[in-house]
Amino acid sequence: DVKVTQSSRYLVKRTGEKVFLECVQDMDHENMFWYRQDPGLGLRLIYFSYDVKMKEKGDIPEGYSVSREKKERFSLILESASTNQTSMYLCASSLPGRMNTEAFFGQGTRLTVV
Amino acid sequence: GEDVEQSLFLSVREGDSSVINCTYTDSSSTYLYWYKQEPGAGLQLLTYIFSNMDMKQDQRLTVLLNKKDKHLSLRIADTQTGDSAIYFCAETSKPGNTGKLIFGQGTTLQVKP
Image 1 (cartoon, rainbow over the protein chains, first blue to last red):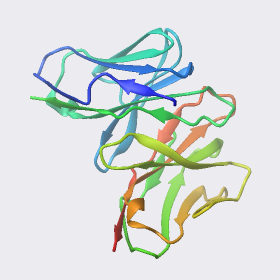
Image 2 (image 1 turned 120 degrees about the vertical axis):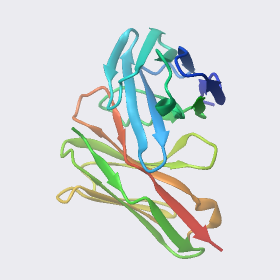
Image 3 (image 1 turned 45 degrees about the horizontal axis):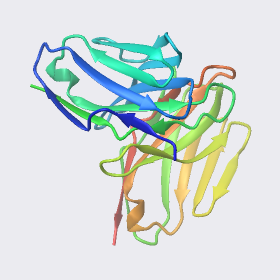
Image 4 (image 1 turned 45 degrees about the vertical axis):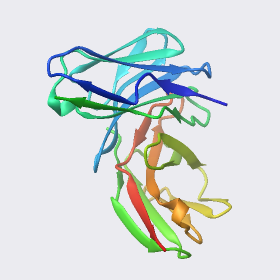
């Protein structure tokens, strides 16, 4: 059974804290993604990684950074959390490029910044 | 850049057909997808269509693609209460790219008994 696991379902952090969201996949996928989901806005891509140590900015990278030191793990970092980063964060993984790139999603992390 | 648009809400009665619509801007889209998100869960792939196809049928699901108008639709026949969820349209663009997925806003389907 394929799996994408996010380290926390719920997180509450204070404004200004550095926050790490972790995602691990067991499918040996090259691609990994971080999205945030907000009502009425759908899924917006924050960052995308297509290989170890490779990353590409998505539509809303400001205030976020990522790390991919190992193929199976993709971390999202909020350098200094702010209340407008309160959201649901979804991690996904997929195979690359030309083929049908079905993405497999984690359960999501609901982050509240107070 | 790429853009995918959906209406936000659809309400139908149990047993009726549901049609969820999506428009996209990138004419080089290779695959177009429909994902389903049930309450409290991540997204799961429902079905997909390759850009050189017009239609795909999979049991109660029918996907129609109009490449000229860049319009994609998902029809659910005999809609059940268990079909209540958020449905996302998504696309990957440009052949040979790494597989970056762009999603629409999601359509919340409400099925009334």
